[in-house]
Image (cartoon, rainbow, N blue to C red; front, side, top):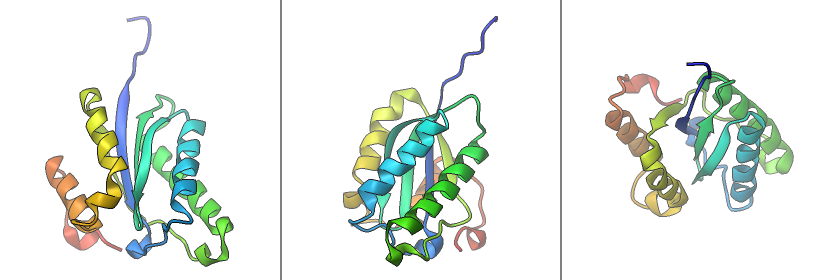
Length: 150
């Protein structure tokens, strides 16, 4: 084949350090936009960004020019620096060290978009810990729960 064709959708999930609820009403919409802007700058077209007070979900089309690890590194590094400039009350803001990144079938994009948009409602019933464990089990990811939480 004379050309390289590529279409990989990913759902990225990570939380604040120790799941501290930094992402309040003052920050969340600005943060979602900023995270989307970072993705766009990395040529990873953001489709939906959202989350809850202690974690983030990003659905994007992964660029063929960047690895998953580099995407996560840049998104977390750049956004963490930026959050600290928004308001002095965020001066101790940090992301957790780890993350989850999951492939998304293009036929399931609408489901994932709706899921991310409904995070507020979703987390009235389920904690981030339970949510992440459900993702890991759904995708058959092997893990040792002793090392999941910082």
